[in-house]
Length: 328
Image: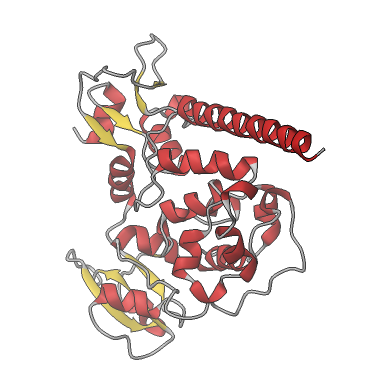
């Protein structure tokens, strides 16, 4: 019995430390009659004790424990991808993906208009790794063509980051954008649109205007298979912290962002003070954001930060009143 089957049977629980898409895919696979359309806010998930079956999410109270093994949902998701992976497949080599594919293949790919993948000889059983001109694809059993995002899932290879120089120039940005990405810095939107193209979708900023976290299946892109990885996008898109983006792409950093980072404490807005409180909880310097933070903890952080700000504002008002009285 694999870990996915153990989650279905109630033998293990899973820690929700991945993206919503990973949560949805794993829970949907393990509990096909109870596929989640929303949720993902709880720390842990397991099979329900209900006669109707299904799954249930829960948070641990301080000092409580779980009396069964716990596996990260990211690990279960990787196991699920492995189950889906076919023996044979192929991908078309392009100038955008050739370096990443060559890394997996183990040698340089000396010509374009080629395919790389896992194949079998006709009437053979052994699987081989190969690179041939696309005209020869019918000479071997290569299976089905896959896209670049699927290639990354199948191989586990890290794509070449695009932070060694300027961002790609193929994407043409619109004059303005709004909706859920209103105010988003142009370089970040440009990179998001590049990721759309890299994963086989059309570059379309309106997708993100309707849903800034749109996945590949929703005409956006899957965060986990980009060069930057999920934590990077969660930091930038979900929490509005652009510092990691501009560390990776320093040449794109606009002057107004630099100035806002140097803003003195007395001129900080309510949102900035609240965000500082959240940043302590979320540990945004880690490669993976601590997704064990509960909704209640976040709400408490907002409440505490707002109270502190109100106290400071009250003290400033009192000081201004006294100064005005002295100056009369």
